[in-house]
Length: 519
Image (cartoon, rainbow, N blue to C red):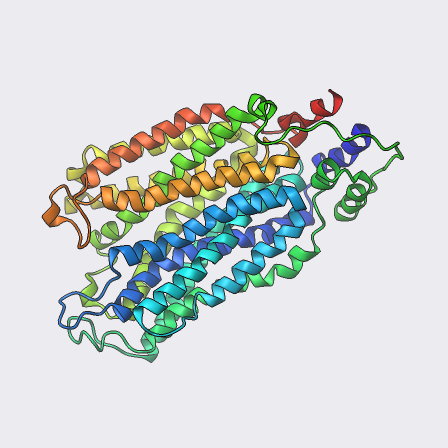
């Protein structure tokens, strides 16, 4: 069986890059497009929700979400994503990638639309509905992580596999841009159609009643790209590696791939054999072969996401300080959405998106290990460069330097561990555990994201309690928080040494499955 099995897999490994590979990138990447669009848009929407539903009569500042409500609205999708990554990762190995792939997309489409609909119009009912559907939206998005990565790595040839899997992940960059541009477009239309004074001129009139439709439209449009690829996903055949190595149906795998690659793959008739003896995820054998690899992929993703998701803490302060976003009271509700969307889109365009594509271009040339190590190294350097002279950077004459260093940190996150932590777990584990191990690694990342997004929200508060934001206790201050983040990045660099290099090797060679067959 090993001989015939390897013929179909060899055909995949040595296949020329063709149109089918690019359609697979788009089909697999749409989940990430939706994921980024959605996570991005919620930060625009929370400001507007505060103005609409938490307006305090006579207050000098516009309404804003209380800390616990804000944490729930922003964090509930992360909790859903974590659960979805583990559950669908496991299911993808049990039932097959293709069967589960449509489910995750359907869930994303339904919940994207539903998160823009709310039952009732009191603040409590709107926020509760939003949180409920965002949890399940996150659950669907979570499933897309292990499935998209696994499907793409199992379809790709060994020469350009890294670039293809990274390109699926890089669709996040386009999702961020689409989110920002669409929010700008809609808020510009609303602004032109429904004129409103600034908050300081007329607190009540600054939020037009129609603004309640704006956030719903922005959230619901996230369903569109995902819905458009549903049909294509349902037509994708199961990956040959799953069919041959896990389902033990080599004949089916050969015929599927012959159609896809448009080549003849010889399928020699062989006598049925006993499937190779296999070990489970919790076995000693797995621990011996892949235990340290799993430690490497989970810890590096966890540490990276702490730093990556903490960026949102500093963004609003930076934007306000350099004058991209004026004080909230000088704007009306709709123009505030426009200004924030514009600032975030500019940051995405300058530092986020280029980083992804640098990885795509170079991952198969210099390798995953080198990119991840370099990324963590520069993130450490730039975080410390921001942290130690923090008081120097806060001076208004030095703000441009701060923005440049800040942008470089996230350029090297994307041209570095943000992309490689996604690619590697889809390559180094055996086919029957690949999706599960990727799901576990990704879930560790989301745990880090929660620490980054919420832990640092409390940590970064000033040490003097009287200066802390309403509803928060005293923290360790921004300077010390940046030092902690620098240490986190350095730990990521150390844990990278547990992750093996997978450049240019076939998946079976990396995971040791060919040896397993022969033992």
